[in-house]
Length: 206
Image (cartoon, rainbow, N blue to C red):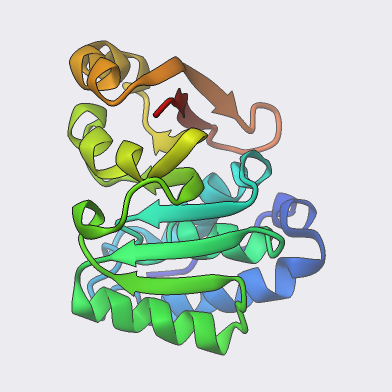
């Protein structure tokens, strides 16, 4: 399977961090399928579908951020590369994925990223300014794992697919339970990326 050629827009999204992004993408292409991080059909769209899909959300983060279910590092490692000014915690319960994440943090020199082997529900609540997740679960299932981690007045920025609006409708009860307000879908990358990214954003009130 041939790995996708780096799109021209990658350099503009990552700026002076592009070499680090290239190193991560090369590592993921070489080891991702073998280590059960990505499927065999993902290599021809690795940049477009995964790396740039994550990187386009980088401006939405600040302060301390957590990626729940970080897995292959999408979006957590990508965002830690793109935003070295943000302190990142990559939360992942599975040992083999934690090993991968830890290796990448070390190899890529990501001094702003910490890997935490834990289930999200076991992480102390209310300690992050922004919490994200990508391709983990439906919103109504994801909220109990993510919203409690956000400090009062902080934000959820969850990367979602085409059904983001429907997921919000289906999550009315947990959104109310976890005091998430101003919930909306934002489409990122229009006119910039070949495939846009949808994020569900909302403010968490303690």
